[in-house]
Every structure is written in C-alpha cells, then in structure tokens.
Image 1 (cartoon, rainbow, N blue to C red):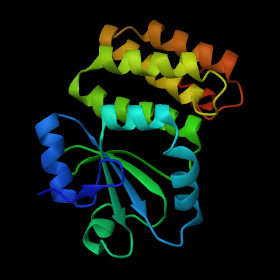
Image 2 (tube, rainbow, N blue to C red):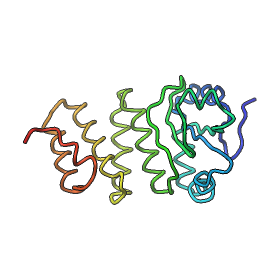
Image 3 (cartoon, one colour):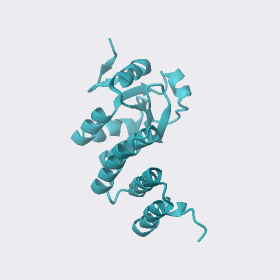
Image 4 (cartoon, rainbow, N blue to C red):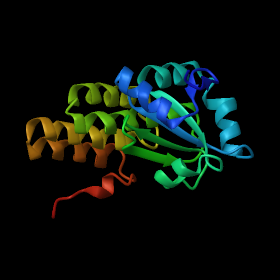
Length: 190
C-alpha cells in the first residue's frame, strides 16, 4: 500500500512515480526539513489555501521528502534548500525547480509555470497556453507574470515558427514589464 497522508501527499519517490505513471500526471516534489521556517510557513499559509490545494492535487501527484533523511533523492535532485520544489515526470526527470517559501499566489503561478514546462516538450501547446493565459489573467501584477508571458511567446513561436509572433510577445514584455529579467532577454541586435 502506498505511503500517503497529509491530505493525499506521497512520502516515497517510487510510489509517487508509479502513481504519476498511472494518472499520467507530473509529480510535484517538495523537499522538507523539520526545523525549516519556510516549510512551516508553507504548511500554515500556502497549502491550506483552497485554490492551491485544488490545483496542486488536480494537476500533480504531490510528493514530500525529507532533505536529511531521503539522502539518495537529495543527491539525485541536487537538493540543498528547504522548502524546494521540483516538477518531475514519472521517470524522475526534472522539468522545473525553485527553492524557497512561496505564498499562495506565487505558488499558484509557479504551479502553472512548472506544469507548462512539463507540457511544452510533450507538444501539449494548447494545454500549456491555456494554463499560462489563465495565470496571466489571474495574476497580471505578479513578479513572475513576465515569465508567464515569455513562455506564451515561446509557445506561439513553436506553433507558428513565425519570428514576428515571438517578437510581438517580447515587445509586450518590454512594454508591460520593462524592469523584468525577461525584458532584458530581448534577443535582437536593434
């Protein structure tokens, strides 16, 4: 029987991988440590949020591992911080990672970014586009909104192979988020 509790979380990588393969979902891995203040705040503030809970369990197989006790997995994913979050496929391939506490809004944005990073290489562009657009609509002022927009531009390019389409997204980033890291990623020699 799978080792789960804590509102449906897995605590064993192999069991989470089996469930992810069965459900055809990615895994959201969180590394945890008991005295970690960011972990405690995540459990008190972020995970109780009903939308966080719904999206997390609808889109992912959630897995929590102890960074000190689960040494093999810590080494496998080069984990050094808690909390830290990784989006994996059922084989254990990492598609996205981010260390540190995230409040409910930031966590929901990161869930969208992580899931999109998992979907895009699979050619599931429409699904990733809908997810990112939803994030941009819900959280236009989030510090990671410019990254949502960049990923949308990448999808637009990958589905059209039209450089002008990508450039229009980059222009939008420069106009709406001029101080963002993504605005500084302007690739043209103009």
